[in-house]
Amino acid sequence: MDQRILWLRNGTGAFSKNIIINGLGMYDAMKPSMVDRKSGTDDYLLMYFHTPVHVHHDGELRPFPAHTFFLWSPGNRHTFGNVQKSWTHSWMHCSGESIPRVLAHSRIPLNTPLLLRDSHAVDRHLESIHSELTTYGVPDPEIVESLTRIWIRCIDREIHHDTEPVRMPKRLLAAVRHIEDHLAEPITLADLAHRSLLSISRFSAEFRTHLQASPIEYVLHLRLQHALHLLRDRNLSVAQVSVSVGFADPFYFSRQFRRRYGLSPMQYRRKLAARI
Image (tube, rainbow, N blue to C red):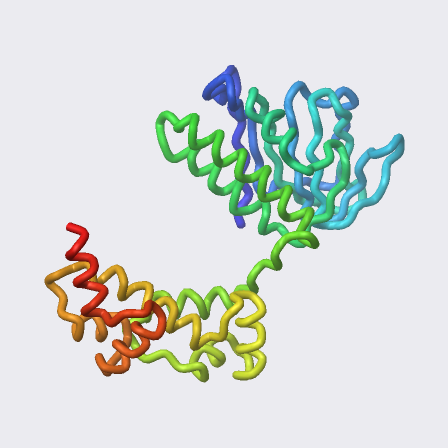
């Protein structure tokens, strides 16, 4: 990701009393050096270090690894950097009434080093905030506030990932998206496993772990859910609905539909008509 620095001076970042963005940086690359603000700043500072650094914490300068995150409160000391190597960080200065409110309902400890698994919980959110601030002549205050609140909530979830559901691996996300985008086409277990670069048995096991269903069960569930929606359109015959959701045989479609919902597609359609 390219380096981006944005400062909003002279109150231009004061979008409302709820949210004020004073500046943000993405992949801000620094030469060997230290930043030393003993009195900090009068706003909150969210900072993520992409590389190893030293940070003043608990009364002394201490080393911290890459992927360390700090959320400093107003007036807290900011002393950080690396005098031996170039270093990179992403950050945002912000204030406003909504910040302490969302922090009060989070589990993020202030002024404390937090180790994230990677930059995923930082990059996409700063990218969204930066885009809102720079794409439009007048950024929407509600959107800026919402994006900031969502970022803080995602950091909260990230640092407590041991107590949260495990994030789905990208290879499985790709398989799920392929299923969603190709419901009307033939979908085989072998093809899904191949796309995920896994054996069929390993893919099936991982899929069930994350989605609580086998790949075939998941495909069937999505197809029948989509069929429920299409059957509301009286311009489509049951046979057309069947083909549209990936069933080449309308009789097989009808059997699966009845097994799932307790009535045939035609009975379901008549039930809908009776409500009008």
